[in-house]
Length: 490
Ligand code: NAP
Ligand code: MG
Image (cartoon, rainbow, N blue to C red; front, side):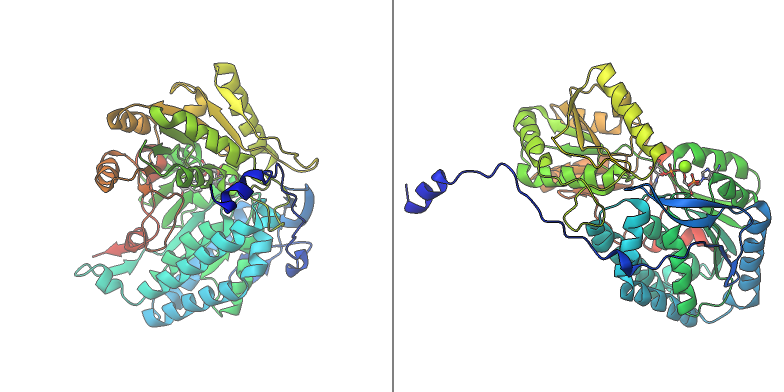
């Protein structure tokens, strides 16, 4: 034994790390007391309003509009005006210029946006700063590049913009989902009316400021806020040529029924219940990081979250042991603290849904594990959770929980892994962990999922198309594919 090893042996393993708070500056964001709807480049005073809050403290942040049928109508008219009177006809290189400007302004103002996103949504600042903001800007940069190359993207097909796009986004990645929607729509020459989620409207409202700063012609981007009723008005509106929706499968199905026979185009990005498959030859420590990133990233409010862990039986025990030890080191708390790994649950409603499904898991006979952690008294919180002894029939193995809750199942052979992974009405994403390249390729062929990550998880790139099979929806966002829903071809 060397001197070093002997010394190492005697060093007590620290049982707990104390972190001094490292809060990001809250005053980077200046909030108004009240926001209207952004219509035709102006703020429209709202008829009705509601308070949007900080889910980590339940403090109200601002009053925002609940758009009525009339207000949605004004926004759609403004978008139509902007489409016919200029935007669809300006040179594509000019269009690109605006998108490049928006991308650069998002980069310049990224700290401010990151703080606002964490304040209104509850996600850790580390994530809004390092994931949401860089990816949002990257999306605008990427589609800016396509704006004057559409003829090359779709050779011999004469692409034309569709017209006015109605876009509805959820609360889990408010600004990023806005970017996924607005960047390709504008690059293709459309104008838009976008509705952010009821609980997270503030980054979309700050984005209106970016739109003005970039001197985008009025009416090209319009934002109306409000709950599902506002979304339903937008879907129904006769002046809208295309609906792009990201959200739950239930609402997606309702929209599909509503639009049947109208000739309006529709893309749906819906829910998921992804399998993250760990083979016995995988690098276990790396896999543990991937599992943690797969399900605890953004409190598990991720449509492509690796919420079903499929572990090869021979390594189940050591892997789950490592995973539990890793969970003890996750820091749950203040979203604005740079040390925080897991922030607040987005809303009371979502917290109730998580609690209900977790209770069902315990009742049906799964074994629950939660690391010791002290949750703040105010606000909406849920400890990182792992369920073992889960059967495929349990609700926690079937339904999307959309929270920091992992269900562990085991398998013996690759065939069994594929069968279990595909045993879901969804098909958005999957993960595979193995040392063998050939096995990765074979699994990627057989898994019915829009995205398959290999030896990593929750990685995004604007150049890569994203979207689902089966009840996870249809249409793709990102990449050249992401332009197609916003174009017509001769
Ligand atoms: P949701 O209730 O379906 O809401 C999504 C959006 O639709 C919100 O803006 C919502 O407004 C609006 N809405 C609600 N009812 C509507 C209606 N009848 N007509 C038109 N719009 C309506 O979903 P959520 O619970 O907020 O979001 C979580 C779900 O989104 C999860 O199932 C998740 O998997 C899915 N998701 C999918 C992706 C993807 O890319 N595939 C990405 C993120 C999330 P309110 O805010 O007022 O409800
Ligand atoms: Mg909802």
